[in-house]
Image (cartoon, rainbow, N blue to C red; front, top):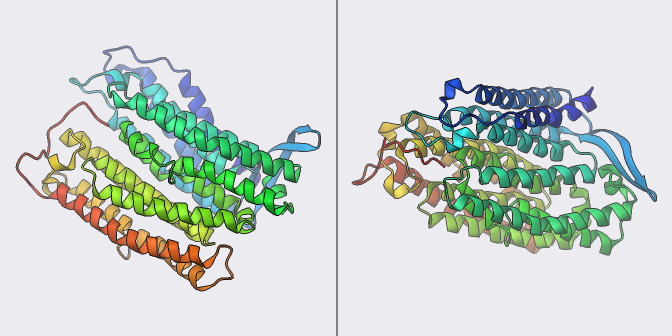
Length: 471
């Protein structure tokens, strides 16, 4: 039964997405209520995400020891590719987070992309493919979460890249959207070349692409180190690690609900999850963990410092995601995948909250520039307090979840620094710990700045002016 639930998890949003792609576009100029294709698209999108969430919760309630079911799909010269799932507690928790954020985004998008009597109809005209692509994006991430074979994981990995390209470029009114989508696609493809080669190297070495076989095989030290370093190239692309981080802030040209999905539950979380999934391999490749620790520390500080210099609300949140991903990969580098996944889960919650609250503000004031916002504490009190809670979690204010998960990362780094028996050299622990402490201070600074700029009333600020140019 558990294996069946695992197979259903990506299948439910996949069916909803494929069905949504068959819907015709709405007639131009038709009112939202008179558009049957839009209503069906809304129903499919919400039902697909809700169904996935129900399956994920059922899976979480049933999962115990790791469960694996598979069947051979292709066998060539003794090299096997299988179809199957590998389920454990971590997979179930991440699946619940992915499905919950996807459901929130689908429901939120219904209102966010609604056509009004004075609105430009271009975005709303294309709502059916938008909702379908969100469903496919969700299905791809869930496939990465439950895949029991590296080839199936790679399929979900690449479908996410395609869906991100389509969704970032959705709003054709914005001249920067197509360029941002292409940049995201190409930069992540650079990393994916290494990811593909790493998977191929592991599969050939183990004689199978089943994750359980790859983890159990006694790989040669050089082969294993090379494979892990190649996998890290893909992780750097998907999870926006230095130097392949540049696509993520530019991806803010896409609709804000898409940004919430990419930053909170899909795409950027995939790289962190993949390393955690294959962590027994990385434990036997300390050189790869050392490289990951350096990349994590640079990414953590670079993202936090860049966030302090932004005026665009969404770019502040984007750079904060880059920084928080550095905490996750830093936890992996110092030997604590549990701390990395804990921070991944808490980050999914507060970053989804922050982006969806930001979308409400942008929709209301008609700009993404914080210097032109103000007085929102009185004009939009619910949104303001939601933002305050999200920023508190981002900054690690107790007793919010972000405090506990970030503290777990720092504690793991300190333990690795003081205990040379860990999988990575002790200096990696010191590096991640010091970078993490500095990142905490910088994060608190830009989170406070963001909250003050949005709450204080200033001359020339907008509090309720409406515009149709939503992002």
